[in-house]
Length: 559
Image (tube, rainbow, N blue to C red; front, side, top):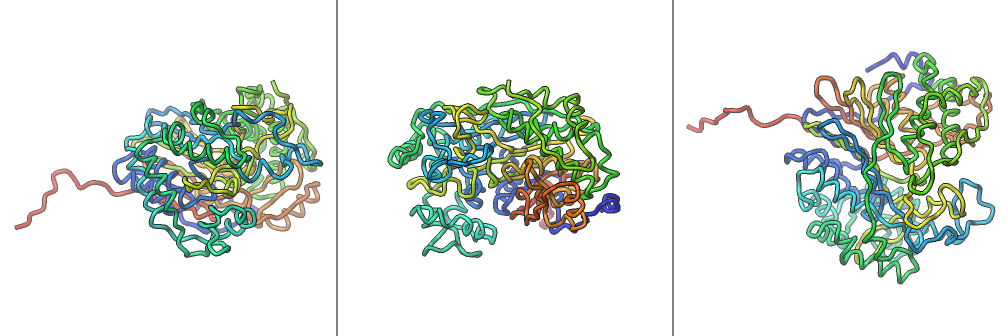
């Protein structure tokens, strides 16, 4: 264990989980059955893309509160040739929705997108046009080696025969039970007899298993141009939702180039707009590069203060200039420049918290999932997917057996703003499937769920690794902090003496049980081996593939 960072830390901690090691591949997700599905593809000779798609489909079964085929997401893919690309499968605004379709709840703060009767939060009117299924199927076809039918088998198996509910799933159901009880279909699966499934009870999804079997035979066309789409559209029409057949037939994924940042000689690659994360991680790292964080130490009041001020600057800029680049001008070049970071850093007071406004002008949910996969050929996938809030729109589509997203809650219901509603507009998120390279070689791939807390947490993991010299397991488990300009949230691992010092600097400190969700990551070691890590904030499980085929020429003498 690297002990140097502990000698300079005010927030020393012990890891609760163990990493996994492998030489021929690694899969890390937030459920053991999903990681096993991906590992099965690697063991069968598939690549990281095959493993990732198998993992994601299985997560729709075993982590149904977080991810689904009627959702959206962003995948960061590094191919064996060293090229990087992002596959944007984010949801879009249905064509029937206009800038003033919803009524903003009176008295809502500018950063709060609540509407009258919660129409953009729960129920059919909260559902945006899905992108996940199309993105997964296209990605597999372009970069994978296995058939859709093959990678779907683990998900079909777990949906049809059932699996044991975890305490984590039980807690998520309990948190959402009040709204879920209003929908008969979703209650039948997750609230039998009116009460949340208990840990250890079987989760059976026979109807969804049939949906997956149909997709295995017909691909994404089953939803976007076929009978599954008819079921979705008919439900929306009957219940006041906005998704129409044209929304499905015209939906397209987008391939995008990564945002690249240089931090202390490391190359950091993250997602571009409409995701806000890559731009603002680059912005924050550029600001923090002007300070010797290694000497200041992990979890000290000095370091946490600087991280908090960088977060507030980033969120002020995010509010002013984030969005779908097809609809708003996002000043990427300025936000990610060293000169701009110098301007912002010069205004930071080392001894006092400040209120920050945006430094640029224009030219999301806490319940997501992330998985990371790598193979022995050099392919790597880090992807974050979601149906937005816990259990999305809190309804289930009869005939599909799946839960749709409530992505409409991420758009500003007030016209005239960067995140205001426009037909076809892609959602802006904080998803952060990140990769870090040193001397041109990939060293880390990581990501996590957690809404607006995602990219600040991903950035903190990067400085844990680069500045503080933590192991991979330490970096994903380390206590986190977060603020967007109001209260400074800190996890319980930040000790009271540090909190007191932060209060003296003017921060309103609030202790939280967790900040963002279960991070998972892969480290690529110089000796060719892989290390996978997942933290305690979810049911994270790394599975490494090692060993190999028998030595050439081996024969058994059976005489």
